[in-house]
Image (cartoon, rainbow over all chains, first blue to last red; front, side, top):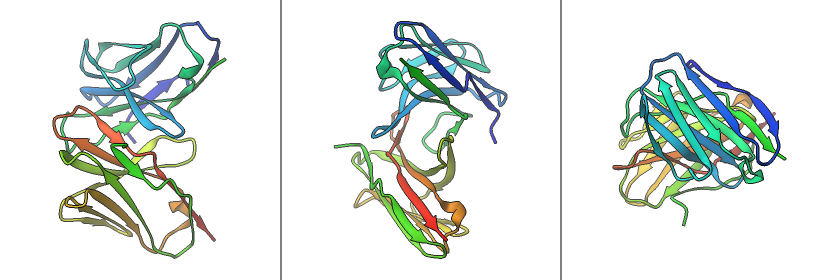
Length: 114
Length: 110
């Protein structure tokens, strides 16, 4: 399995609080991604990174920010969490960007916003 | 219309049966295709890529029909361990993302 660690694995917090999720990889892959998975929607891309300090938005980026200061770490921040951000969050990595390159996923973080 | 559509199921089949899923995509510029499987409360894992000529990996066969814009996954001699949700994934030419279907839930019964 790809060396991807997400932390925390579970978190419950209150509306309006800041939340940061961490994705750590040991594969030295250039590309990293944050997805959320919700019933009825499948996996949706939030943000992705194509190198240190290089990030871009996905289809559901509102309310989220990311940072990548090192190749191995990609952080997802909810500046002021809302109940609509209750979800399962997955980090993924890929070695190179290209149409034939699959992504490999971390174990996920279950986030509940009360 | 969703970019990638799958029958959500659930499909309940007896062990040893053959089962097939289809997945349709709307963007004709879709360039590559994958099947992932996801076990309950686990992360998606790559099952197989789908090539234009069709490809087989043991009991699993994937096929692509570009004219009709669908891909299929066939599982032969199904095992209890095949119970999972199967996600269809499409990469659109020029896009920087994978597009996921909602998944088809499969349960293999003893």
